[in-house]
Image 1 (tube, rainbow, N blue to C red):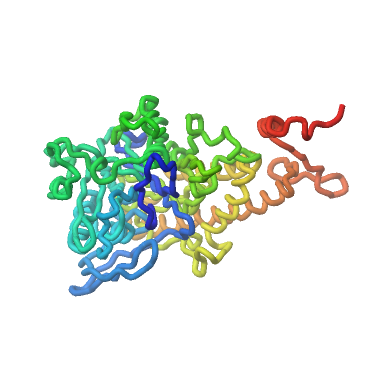
Image 2: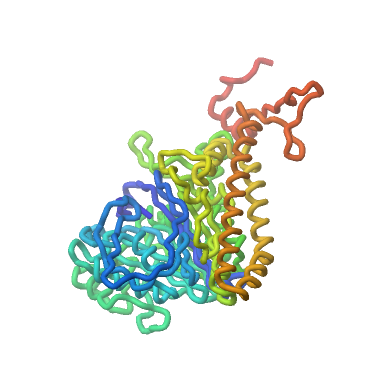
Length: 545
């Protein structure tokens, strides 16, 4: 996701802007339980988003749908409403179709500034009108070919309980009311990812079952003089959005980190490091060396390149308490020379993230679960939101709360309250957060079987009873999470006040015999920081013998 920044960044400049959003995709035979799964991290500074809801409905002929830009809220125009729309909660609908995205930008001149549909509006309209991933692709492409696409180049994740697809799309310039696009089905036994860099290169143009593309996808590039080779050699990525240094190091490196969890990706290090011009690019997908679980995907969304050459824990940028985050913008200059920070999957500017679980063997209202968190994935518990749910939890849809209005009833603000305490004192405070986070996550997953067993029993009586039960369950868990996070916020400020640590036992603060708080522990510098300080200052702070 990018606002109005293009990723046409050159290696020679060394500049990396705030590259946003990450998606992971898991085929049903690559997952541990047979579900199709995908993820989305919606990242952008200043963004305030909760859990959206669009109720199912029947619409009269001639009814029009007003289109407002998902990012800016500016009015774009109107399109005819569909005769029937389906229930959508977050980025999943009642048929378990899930759609996410990342923005790659691409050629600036291809943006259709006169188009009506932006990428966000397109996602939620498609979710309201599609029962399968293939239908969503058809809906999305027909709409933008009719009304124009006003966003930059986008990669979409489009999944249902049986299939996982990746689709890339770009406009054809102002006033064109058209797009070039290609969609590729991810093999059932494979995993895929994208992170703000176009990833579809050459594709099998004869495989009508697993590949779809616009009729002029190649012809348009020829008309512009951007491609002159044989059709079979056409690469969507290289022609329309060739990777720059930042596209490789700040974007493709996130894909590499995900793949590296499930296979040996060392051979692609020269590519994602971004400094070897003709290095071999990564494949669109890989077959993982183990089945991918829900917990694996949650952990992947919390990644900071730990244990890799891009690890953020080995330089002064981490501060005193080993923070695996970096201030933005990602680029900075010293004495006129440009430098950059790494951009991991888990980042402080996340508005929300999710892991979507889609299961074909269950009734659709029970099979689809959006595991949702309203902040940086590393700093939140993912609460279950079932795809048939008809009411959002108050904490994910809080009246009065917005980007500049704090509310202690709102998950975004309470979770950010906690995470922003933890960021600068990460190694000291994060273990307390992680303990609560993991306890909640584990309890949701442990309870899932029993909850769905009860939902299936109710489903036998009526679908609505099952939907109501799961809506109530989801909302209760989200609100309990909010209450627990408030407790965590208070615990952290008390335990770690003034950069000291108050002793606890069994989660309770210790006291002296007279009732005072027990003597605090003053931790001082971590050894690594102390050594770095002495190395930098020499004997300046050396104590006399």
